[in-house]
Image (cartoon, rainbow, N blue to C red; front, side, top):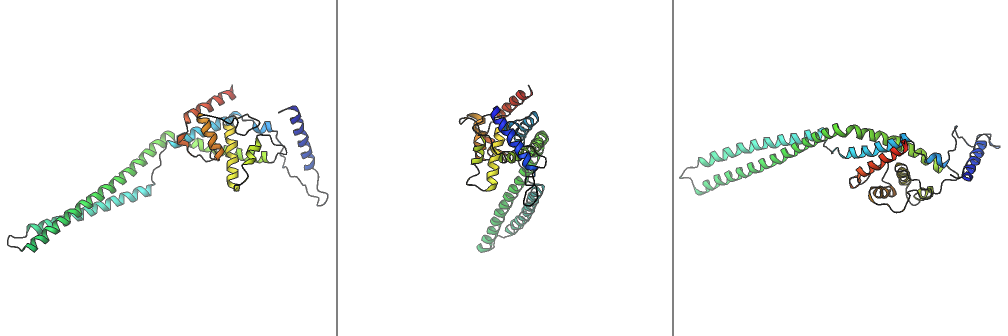
Length: 285
């Protein structure tokens, strides 16, 4: 920030403080309720301290950890599948009983029985055999589904034991970062003379609903702070990036970087983590 910009900022702050103490001549109310808040300079808003850098690192590491915890069916879903398998097992038992009866009936047909009687007994026997095969096939499929569901639960529990702590820490860091970003966005929007790069952020407010406008702004601010973008003219820094940083930049432009993540499996999280570690080491000296 140049000396001229700093002087301009100080003058604006002084004017705002004076106005905050001047009651309205018409109604006598205070026109500006600052609640003790001081107008911060662009340099102060842009500063990322060590605590926040560590939060960004924990956030991205937590995302990677959360990806490594596979989805699993709920206990109710597993129990439902087990009951279905048991029901199919009962169906097999019924079909086996029907087959034994058909076999007995077919075996009791004497040599002197009519062809019609023999054909009927043989047809009932073949039908019972097909029904048993079908029942066994349904039981096998239902049992496989139940076993697969149980295996998914076990796998998720094991992964959660390994990665759950990091994932939880990342989520907590994400909540703190989101709150910080929202406060920063309010500060920037309330500045009478915002820095040049913030025009890129303001631009995304046109043509979309309020929710997506805020999401895109938060995403841009998140990208800028997480990766220490110091370009004073453009919110996302240089126009061309390659590799993981370029992928994250694309997500930031789309408004998906923060607080929601989209397409994370396509990103090289190892490279992102390495970059964040380097930034952290740089800030801690």
